[in-house]
Image 1: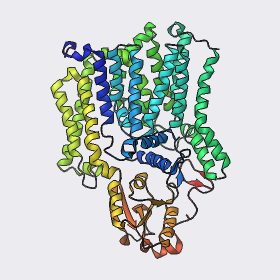
Image 2 (image 1 turned 135 degrees about the vertical axis):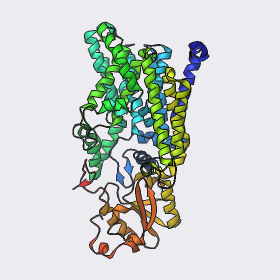
Image 3 (image 1 turned 60 degrees about the horizontal axis):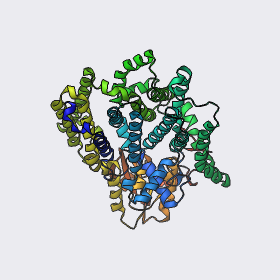
Image 4 (image 1 turned 120 degrees about the vertical axis):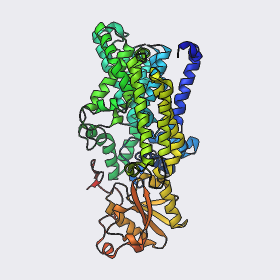
Length: 583
């Protein structure tokens, strides 16, 4: 299809609005149609909900325990969204949506400054259509907010270091870094952009504006960072200092050290080899990974020819530094490098129009779309025609059948590939990805929500015990707490399960006729007679039971299930590996 057949290209403003509309709709599709899903979403929402209900926004809390694993900014954003909207189903996903829209606009504006409007739109679409980006931004995780703040920091630094000096943008960049740290400890990633800038100042000083190294205004950035962090850390230190609760000391130590420096240098989980992020580029980062491979020869030629475009090399250097930084840590997860994706898209922007004209790349995107589509459709057909492996692993235990949805996603991709052919491979890929996320949000969310969110099992529990009964949780997950139809009692989250069970038995004995305990099966035997408990089914790959005081065995009452009558998180510190309290 030629440019003459696309009248929108004659009106850049209309094309820009259409692009952002389609990408925004893709990110927003399904908001309000589901509750929080594990693994992490219910945890953050429970913390945010506790903030709203208790009025204590300074120290996050999960049930009766403190929550020291993450800084509070993201939970603040969710709680503030709820107070503005009054609906948790919308509020818990709203920060991610707004972060996504901000990130896409920043990518577009930066790319437009060293490339054409069309190249900037391609860079924006590349960011949004990369699998991992949309997967994360359609969920209520901390990473979307982190990505937006890191991108804002890079944007401010680019405006100052390339278009400047512009000290206002410079200060804003450091404020964004501080907010990024308040969202997740690695919010400083935007500062990696200073490394390629210093290299350019050394090797090609003519390529960037001259900003005096001794100009006192450079200090405004670190000062802005410290002042912004003090808005959180100042009240936190005062609260801990004025309290004699050991658990507050443990919280402060955990949030400042165990979850940051120690987790990077000596991680206790997610061990991966040094080349792990190359695998992420080739899988979760498609199509960005494929376009990066296609762009490497052009980038090499530009470097050999001495062509210095700071809007290319500064973002590209930030991406490369992020890759190296996380590769050096033994602990790795695919989303760790996601904050560098927008800068990679900005760096590739001037090359994208030419790259997408390459015949082999068009074929590659077409074949990638076809392979993914056939895989989805084939998996659905295999499940329909009696392959039990798929059904055991993927079908929901409550009779929900996701296979028509998977087949529809695959069928759309196959149809697009057959209709548009390989020469329009980029459009085929974009159409398939957009359709897939739209179906996932509008159809998949309501279809799977009852089971994924634990709403069904908690409603069943409420019906069994009746409206006047009291309910306590043992060995619970955050979604159980959120979806309960009444106020619940808990005895800690990370405490040993036997300690929780011991406290629960004492709680039952205080009012045996009206109190029930909700627990999963692996926490009960041999202390609870399952013949006297009520099996209420499975949720989130666990089997759940309800029981009252009469289900407690005589041996358990005589010997006790374990020690556990002290308040949750007693004197001592949190062990960073097990999450248990060390006395």
